[in-house]
Length: 179
Image (cartoon, rainbow, N blue to C red):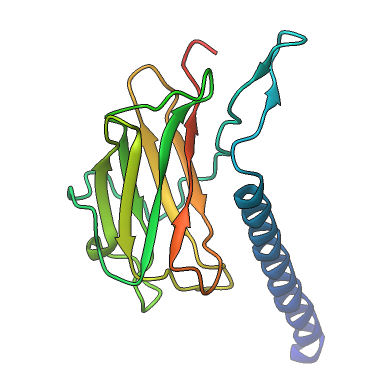
């Protein structure tokens, strides 16, 4: 009986590894292309009227989110993530946006030590410092971000830094509730 099950489990195991590697590779490609493109123009629902800023693509919340992270701008050193929170309607900066950030620690595990809440400045700018996020369980290095601002849809996204990059820029473009 075990002789029959062993090939089945081997096929299942390698299939899961392949699927996970493919998803991780896809995440990296999407991340790198999003970083290169920046906030470009997209078409609005009204012909001939492009939206000035492309909304930041959403992502899943994931299993490691915990609300009410402490207010702080740093959870380590070695990598800085910064950018501007903007409106997709006109690219204007959004001040006072609540930004929650969480990432795995250097050991690949999540804990309260690597969570933070910060707010965008009047200019919409934000800055967060941490260690370079590790890869774990086949996932590429990434930072989770949840952004809330009055009058805008809540955004949950992820940032995938490029290996060897110590200063990363990532504008967060929110969609107004009325859109």
